[in-house]
Image (tube, rainbow, N blue to C red; front, top):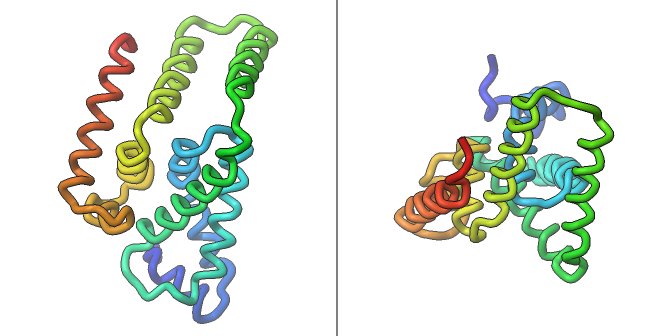
Length: 185
């Protein structure tokens, strides 16, 4: 299996679209999870995912080597932050209630489901909500580390903070999540 770095260089140097497609396949799941933790709606996540890869393609010639995953995570994080900044003036509290009501209506219309499946979905949504409620720094560190598997030193460099701060934010995130999710099995 080719290294990510080799695939990206193959695309940069020779325009090898298959190499780029292999990178997209390899990194799609964690990147969508990272974006999902930073953005509110599935539509925003899909748009940000597409935009991230467009930026990767446009900036690929500036890639100078090194680990590809932190490089991709930095671009995805930047895209998500830009979207959050753009949306700040348009977010309404009613929208959140609407999303919850739609989810409840969808569950009611889906017919009966086994209790375990319902609890699993409820727990996953509780976790997503709790992660979204974390302060920005700890949330970004948690998502980059867990979803992106980015090393702490690379997270610190990307966020422009000391390694100690990054580790503190990770601890803060895990403690706050434990506190918020204490009632979940």
